[in-house]
Amino acid sequence: MGIERLTDFVASRDHLLVITGAGVSTGSGIPDYRDSDGQWKRKQPMYYQEFIAEDSARQRYWARSMLGWPLFASAEPNANHRALAQIQSQGFVRGLITQNVDGLHQAAGSEAVIDLHGRLDQVICLNCQQTLSRQAFQQQLEQENPHWQAQQVQMAPDGDADLGGANYRDFCVPACAHCGGVLKPDVVFFGENVPRQRVQEAHALTQASDGILVLGSSLMVWSGFRFVRAAAEHGVPVMAVNQGKTRADDLLSYKLEANCEQTLSALAAALPMRPVPSFA
Image 1 (cartoon, rainbow, N blue to C red):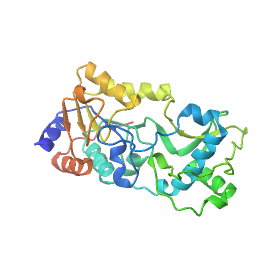
Image 2 (cartoon, rainbow, N blue to C red):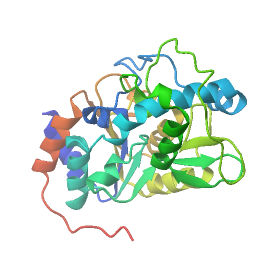
Image 3 (cartoon, helix red, strand yellow):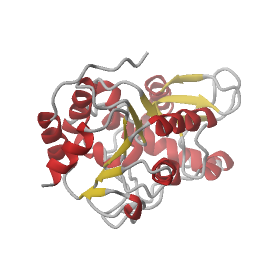
Image 4 (cartoon, one colour):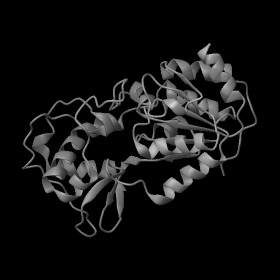
């Protein structure tokens, strides 16, 4: 019954907006942060103010990131990403806002994607705004810290790794080669604002939509929840596929508590073909 209702909802929209969260990428081996009640599964991630204020915080972050990056960078699109790209190619998705930072929607072939929280495959200088690829910075980190590379780790959310009570004092964090400034992954940390232009683009997509489908997100973070709330306030129906509680439960027209991969694969198979919209 749930998949039929979801199929009818998607098929009856001309401007469907999809919002995705961590639950879409867990099948690619990237862990999520929250349990079915929306509570933290692990220690809360580093906050922006801590990162920019303390050398020790940056050492801790980049040490964990250096060890977790190879696993994160090797992640590939799963059935969720492929199904969404197929549904878009069938003409049913006009835009996609993702809270994930892994770039897997684009790797699977999705278009018109807004990376709300940025992309982890890029690094930015907080002083001069120069950017470099995360892979290039990885090489710098490994060259400066060869004694850290022998450790076996398990990937944590957002591409870092849990290192327990490790001592980070001897970890060397390279500075910006252009100005000597502090380098940060080009993603939105907790406690940091999403860039204004990106928010405006996401609001424009929301305002142009005639339905929103939330996938694999508890929407506990305001940056994603605000678009659902804005849509609901304007009478735009919102449906969700998520295993567990969401912050928007009282705003949803319908919620399907089910595995995203099975649901999206079934949805893609059930939908007919439409003329493909232009994303130019």
